[in-house]
Length: 90
Image (cartoon, rainbow, N blue to C red; front, side, top):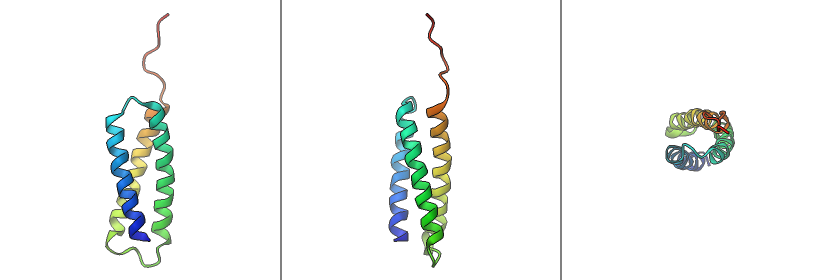
């Protein structure tokens, strides 16, 4: 189970990162992906710390993906909830 969750999180991270780079100006999707990322991080850390055997050889990579997902989620929250830079002139 540990390895399966790792690969699911790794796939999610790649899809999420590519989408974030491709759609920087889409604020609604940035908010949505940020909240999905929060759920992925919770599941990732829960799985990592619930594994009784330490997870074998993918354990350090599992932690790396979890922490990089946190950094990506912070960026997405900032990008999704930041105020508009330019105000409309009437």
